[in-house]
Image (cartoon, rainbow, N blue to C red; front, side, top):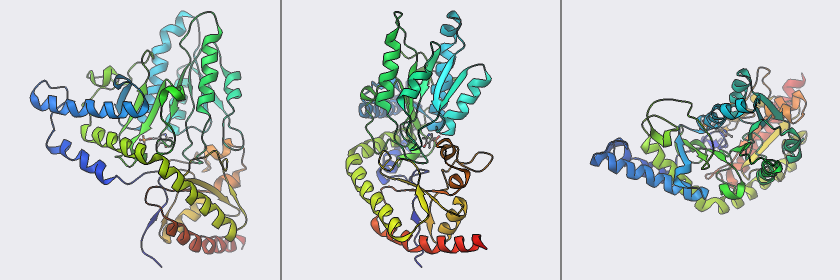
Amino acid sequence: MSQKRIYLDYAAATPTDKSVLKNALPLFNKFYGNPSSIHKDGVSASIYLENSRKIVSKILSARPSEVIFTNGGTESDNLALLGVAKAARGWLDKNGFKGHIITSAIEHHAVLRACQELESTGFDVTYIKPQQNGVIDPSDIKTSLRDDTILVSIMYANNEIGTIQPIYEIAKTIRWFRGRSDVARSYPYFHTDACQATNYLPLNVNQLGVDLLTLSGSKIYSFKGTGLLFVKTGVNISPIMFGGHQELNLRPGTENLPYIVGFAKAMEISEKIKEKESTRLTTLRDYFLQSLNDRLSGYHLNGDDKVRLPNNINVSFDGIEGEQLVLELDAAGVSVSAGSACTSNDTGASHVLIALGLDYDRALGAVRFSFGRHTVKKDIDYVMRVLPVIIDRIRKVNLR
Ligand SMILES: *Cc1c(COP(=O)(O)O)cnc(C)c1O
């Protein structure tokens, strides 16, 4: 058997692109000044910083002053939720409001845990359940909106099942709600976690109609531990960490310039090949599903079969635990995930699949195959040779 690894876990992490690395290297040892320093070394560094901000803001159709570089998707999500909640305190108190946030039950834990934290400080949180295909119905958001709702946070695309949420429609609902009363109001804001969507979906923040948007470098062939939060001009938000005045007073600490420069390069590359890659991966995804259909029975695709990212396949196999299959595939040289890299609640089943209303066994049986830039047809052919054999063997053992 081939010893070459076949990596099908791009939704968990991506390899760093060669030119991302190349662009970042001089910032480690040549332009190492602190962007806040006023001498020449500081100024050179700050030019790189501001240039990166320009590159990224252009891709988002935002202003440079609306881009806050962070330490990744988790930090951006936390800043969005905790920062908006903190800044809203005055407005809430003035109106005698409790404070309410709407999110979905299938968000990344970076959003869900931040919401739990806010619940513990007195906020109400509504967790919208998706339909069984994993897509949120915007009318469920509409009926959950309250006078004291300060934020709606719905992910652009899900990290486990790849389903794409109707961000435009949700934004429209929120705009309608804001304009509905006689009193002009800016709440609720709309935040979306776009970490998984970056490589495949449009990122124009005006067209999306979002006020805040999270991106992560680790999913776009850049470095782990880098990302950004888009914060629309006028959004009332407070910092959640304290120190220097960096990143428009919202994110203190010396900027990680090599990573920021790499992140901007990664965004450029991703944007340039977005359409072509989406088409290529959609073809590969359909080929995978067709091949699976030709070779196996007793499996179910989780999440909508069309309204999903081109690179995501999430399947439950009857009579098999996802984790078992992940280990067997690993031994055969293939890297995949059960649920997601950061899956599992106390029961071991994915909170996303449980929220779809799937039964416990099906949730436990889920495996995620996620493709990327280096995935080719040959990889899928190899998986299709080993997968049926493994499944057959596990099923026989489990039956005994
Ligand atoms: C990966 C991911 C995150 C976390 O990003 P980090 O950069 O790892 O902190 C948040 N949300 C989604 C949807 C993700 O896929």
